[in-house]
Length: 467
Image (cartoon, rainbow, N blue to C red; front, side, top):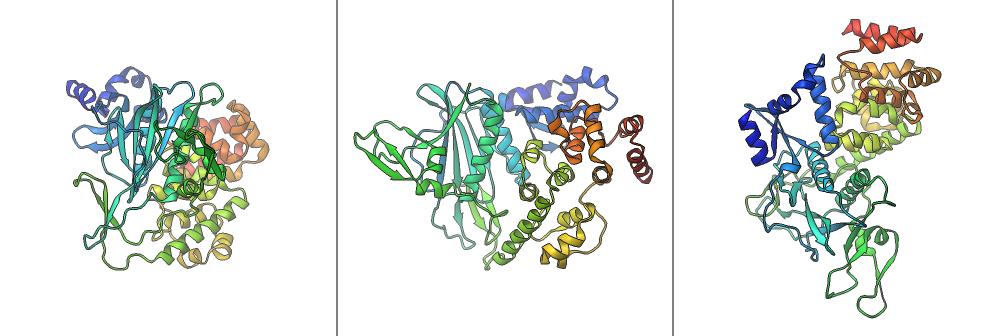
């Protein structure tokens, strides 16, 4: 174990053998070590204590522990005016900034990057992190001090771009859709760390742009800028009102599910700066095909939302989303499609998961024929490969449960009422509590029999025999 301890101490990397050694006593008391260790790891991820790194052939799974990362001297982010490629957000606490906030945000943004299919190693230190966000953008997160209070700065930057002939393109600000998404992720995770803004709160600020050459940098509240037409500043000694149009344009909500990208890109940081370069000198991909794809997803999403089936899709897609919080916070089917796109399960050229969704949910007749021409052309009966037998079995379970039976089961497991407002929410929460376990369905089936839900138990027993 000595080499694993050294790796943790020097690099902040926790190897799976050391995890099993540290939790040896807890694991020996369980029937299924692998299930327990998976639960422990997911719990630590949820609290921002670690995230998974690419596995090593020698050491197995590897996890980065942000709290054990080294500090890089003289490498902090600064309070300064943004350049042409960057948009900055400052997290300023009203009282104090919990130490864990930085670690939690680092884990969330790295996980999001991995969900998008990025395999670049992020540059991580205790005082600064640099993480690739997508093909053209990266984020920097760092600890700074504002008025002697520890705060955070988040920079969203657009890479320098170069075409297939090696010619540099003009620099420009990050895409508004990216800024909007980063802001949403930031707020969601800060709200989890700050359960009550009234007691211990924070503000999201940007540098004041009203003052041309301020003696001391000061801020404007970002939320105020996004909701109001003008901002004011009296630091200059005169009354000035300035339009917020430029700020609002930076964070304009993007309705697109996927960015329209003219050509595939490769990235390289060997030049000392983040850079994206086209891999094809032809005219690139057809933007119309991407737009048609987005229209199709919007149409399908509206149909599922209209028929109140979004919670069913949450249950169906549970194994496809690595961060459970993202799944639970999704309010529309389109939100779920975005998560599938980010982790690579859904692409304009691969509609298999949508086709399988329609088959498993038994909605082909309406969704394919009446909602989307694209799906009508792409649809052919094939075996479902996007979802496990267990996942399909849970959808069947939801179909046979009646409303009064949902309430009965929720009461048996002593769940809060909001966790069984419908059969899909009930099953999802029972699965998260491991009352429903893919590897041990017998105890749950026995509970169904004990409370008289024999028709449901029979369905599951039949599925077990078919596996």
